[in-house]
Length: 265
Image 1 (cartoon, one colour):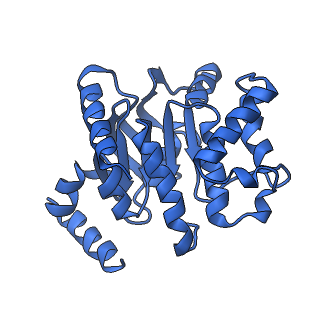
Image 2 (spheres, helix red, strand yellow; image 1 turned 180 degrees about the vertical axis):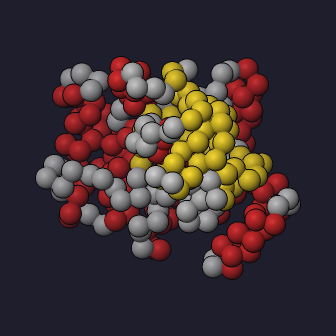
């Protein structure tokens, strides 16, 4: 793994942050499920090519926040702007955003009745109107990148969890997104499979992809993140570089979280 490449990526991200409009902007976002207030005045800007890791205890609003970014959940107050387009009830705007944003879930969400190759080519062919041969060539290139080209003609049920998650990453990349969102991509995996997925994500980070990752994998956060966001009780409590967040936490809530999660590793 190239530390130089990661350092260069961080430098590019900081330069982009200074000059370019945010890839993702959340401005005083509030979200309720019934009477439960799950996001409380959440504001965050993610620069193009920046890698942001979101952590926090269960129920802190992390997954809800990332699901709001591509409208899998609908926020009730505030603004969310993705790639210069504000999320609204305009379906054309939503389609435009979803074409540029890839998402990887904790539960893979592959189509069980389609082969790995068919899972990867479905959206490029139907949404991007990509010719089938071009879509299949791209899918094989990306399956090679995630180190499972030999699984292309198998069905998801024939693969391990780690392999399925790598297929899910390749499938998202087949749409050539500008932004990748990951919602706890390793939480459903056995421990021995976690590293193979994280290795793929580290390599993706090295390419300069804008990434927002909800995860409990603190080693990944230290290695890859330009910034770490700590959430608790629906609020962003602290934001900083990995060094700042892990080595010099400012709030008791973050200190408690780190003591609990690091005790478990």
